[in-house]
Length: 614
Image (cartoon, rainbow, N blue to C red):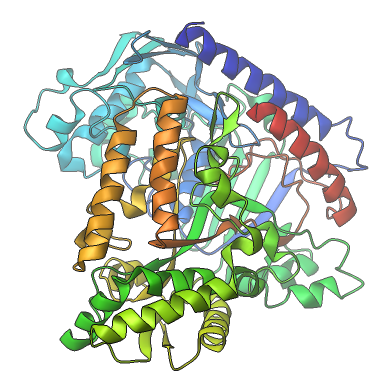
C-alpha cells in the first residue's frame, strides 16, 4: 500500500474512533451525565499570554492556551492526542516522502472579534506564516519545525538567503498547499498541528501590530476572543464560522486572572464561582476524607506529554574548583551512578506528589509506554527496551545498590576521593510538592547507602529563571528535570542527551569513562537518526540508544507527568487529551463529575484509545 493511502486510511480511522468516543460521552451517554442549560464555563488562570500572535510570543502555557482556542493548524487533535484533519481536509504524501500536499477546506472564513466574516482562508495564509517564521528579523517561534526540515528554511534563517521563493512552502492554488522537505522526516506527519495560518490581508495591513490584542487579530479556530484585559479577564465565545462548530458545545468561557489562581481555585470551586479546580497533594487528603468532596475528587492520570528523570551533571558549575574536580571524578564512576540508580526508591519519592497510587505514574523508560509503535509493537517492547520496561520495583534494588556502593568506594578511594560524597541537589520551587519529594529522596538514599557514603545537599532554587540559573548553567550535581514531545517517534525523547543540549551536558564530560560512553551513545543515536523511514529498523536502533543510557545509569528515569487530582464540571476525557487547553469537544455539566462516573468513562476511554492506537 502506498504512503499516501496508508496516511489517508489512518486519518480516516482516527476520525471515526474519535467521533465514536465523543458520541459515547454525548447526548446518549450511559453515565448519567446532565449537561448545564447555560453552556458558559468559568475558569481561573495565573499565566497571562504575552501576545495573541501565533508565532511572536513565548511558548508558555499562558500564551498557548489562548492561541490554541483561536486558531488551528493543518491538523488538530482528538481526545487521545492523535492528529486528525484540521484546516486541511486531506493530505497526500509523495512516494519518496519528501513532498506533503495539504488540501485546505474550502469556504472557510476568518472572523473578527465580533464574529463578522472577513477574508476566506487560503493556502497563501500558511505561506505567509511560513515566511514570517523563516525571516530571521522576526525571531519567531516554531523555527524547530522548519530549520533543517523544510527545504530552504535553514539558509533563510541564517541569513544566507533572502529570497522567500526558495522556501519549500508553496501555494499551488487557493486550496492546495505543498510543503517540500530537505530530507525524509519519519514523524513529519505529526507536524501538521504546528503549522498555523496568518491572515495574509490583515498581516499586510497591520505588520508588527498583528495579534497585539484581540481586535488586531482574525480568528479561524473554535473560539474568538471577545474580551482581552491582560491580568484581569479573557472572554472566549464560540466561533460559529469554524469548520467543526458542531463539536464546540461550550458557548462562552469567562477566564479570570489571579496570580494565586492554583491555590485559590479549590475554594472558589466550593463557592460555585468557577467550574473546575486542581486539587494539590497538600490538600488532597482533606478533600478525599471530607464527605462533601470525596465523591467528586477525581484522581489524576498519567500524562506522557512530559517525562521526568533524575539527571547527573557532567559539566559542574557549582562551588569551588576543588568541588568541580571531585564531582568530575565521582560522576565518571559508573558504580557510583549505579548505586544511586538502584538505591532510589521511586515509589516513596512519587508519594510526595501522588500519595494514593504513585505506581500508576512511574516509568522505567524515557520514552513513555504507549507513545509510539511500529508494525504493531510498542517502542518500549523492542530489543533491549523490553527488559528495562518490565524491571521489578521500578528499578529499586537495595542489594544491588549496596554492591555498587562497595565497588565505588574502593575505586574512588584509590583515586583519592574523600567521603562522604556531597551531592548538590537544587529543586524548582514552582513544581508542586517537589520540595517534599526532594526531602524524601535525601532521607531515603542517605538511610540506605549511609551518610558516610553520600551527603545530599538540598537547595531551593529561584522561583523565576530556574532553568537559566540552575539547569542550563550547570549549577547542580543531581537534578530532577523533564522534557516533552509532541511527535509520536522515539527520536523526540533524545533531546536532553544529545550534543550541545543544556540538560546534563553529557557531551561535555571531563572524565574518560563518561566521555567514552557519551561518544558511544552519540554513535548509536547518529545511526538511528540516519534511518529516516518509519520502520522496525529505525525503532530497533533507537531502542539500543535509549537502553545504553539507562543501563549505564547515565540518567535515572522516574515517571510520566500527571494530570493531577481535580474537581470539575467537565468530563476531562471528552476533550483533546494531552494537548493545550482547548475547550473544543467539552460539554459543561450541571453538577460536578463524580468519581464513579469518571471511572466508568475512563474504562471505556482506554478501550477506545487502545483501538485507536492499533
